[in-house]
Amino acid sequence: MKVNRLVLLAVAGASVLALSGCAQTGNVAAQVGGRTVPTSDVDFLTRMQCDSLNKAAEDPTQSAQGGVQMVPTSQIRTGMVNTLVQAELDRQLAAKEHLSYDTTTLRNAMVQFQSVLSSVPEADRDRFRSMVEAIYRGQLQLYALAQRQLADQGTTNPTQDQVDQAIASIQEKYRKKVKIAVNPTYGAGDSGVAGTVDPSLSKPVSSFAKQAGSAQPDATWVGKLPADQRCG
Image 1: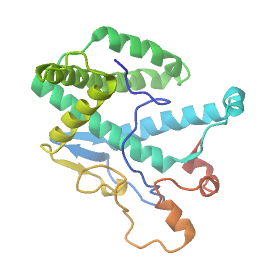
Image 2 (image 1 turned 60 degrees about the vertical axis):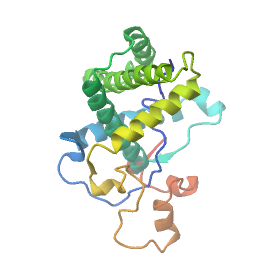
Image 3 (image 1 turned 30 degrees about the vertical axis):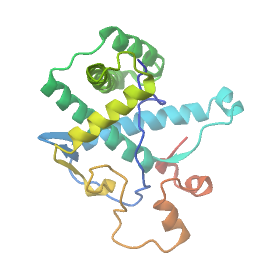
Image 4 (image 1 turned 135 degrees about the vertical axis):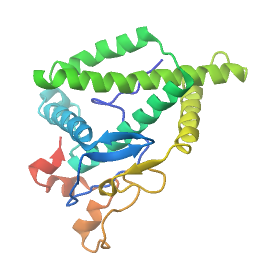
């Protein structure tokens, strides 16, 4: 199977906002059922992703290929919230259904991930590897469930697209059964997906404020952000 992958983690399918100027409180990014997604985990993965993008931006090879798009740190942080919320949902569903997974595929995925891990500060490697491995494991467990359901429906040799659609359907149905409360800082709507609503109490008027609320802010605007608020 194909394990989702970006520079570090899979962050897909969610609209994101640049939540500049919003302060976080406590260490709770989200509550998923009876489990907490810590803000510290969100910030840790955001730092890992930003460090990777910054290194890629400095790589002459990547520059020759068009470079790395600069993005607001807040956009990556919002994506990491969604990634960790989905990972927790996958973990809970896997535990409930006693789902297995392909250990060889997981091992191979982590071997591929080693090249990223080797560039991370040694003090962060164990934590980073553990978190990414847990995300991959959950994906593999849902992959197995999707294959089983498709087989029950008579599709014994599904395409990757069919499996992906089945996984998305499984995740959507299970999400509706679990109470998800995301820290308002991340602008989550009723669906519990961060970045789907503007968390600001005021309506953006200036062009700068409107860019801050854009899912795809202009590159020029991103470039004007302080260095600690952008990646790449």
